[in-house]
Length: 128
Image 1 (spheres, rainbow, N blue to C red):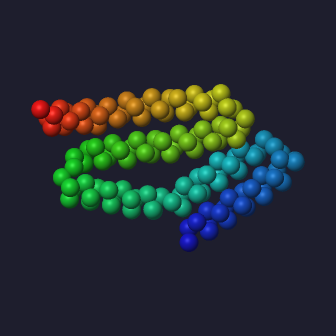
Image 2 (image 1 turned 45 degrees about the horizontal axis):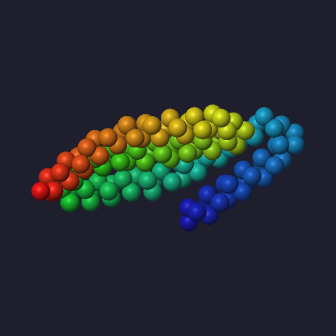
Image 3 (image 1 turned 90 degrees about the vertical axis):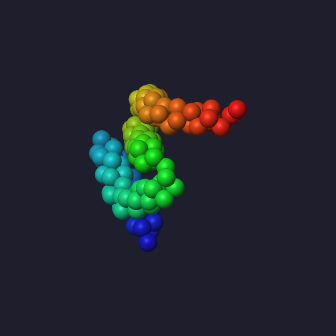
C-alpha cells in the first residue's frame, strides 16, 4: 500500500521538522522539499500507468494524441506548480507563492488554446 508509505514518510518528516524547528529552523524547508520529492517518486509509477491508459483510450476513440499529450503536460504543470506554491507558503513567502500560482495559470491557459480552438471548430461544424 503506497498510501501507508506516503503517510509514514509524511509523519517521519513532520517529527523531524518539529524537532529541527527548535534547534535549526533554517533546515526545515530542506526536509519539506526532500519529503515532497520522496512522495513524488513513490507515485511516479502510478502516473505512468495513468498516462499509458489515457493514450490507449485516446487511440481507441480516435482522439488526436497530441491533445492527450497536451492535457497530460497541463496536468503536470498544475501538480508541479501546486508543489512549488506549497513550499513557498511553508517558507512564509506567500507573495512568491501567489506569483507562481498566477504564472502557472497563465501558462496553462496559453497551452490550452489549441484544444479550445479545436473544440470551437467542432461546435461550429455541428451548429447549422
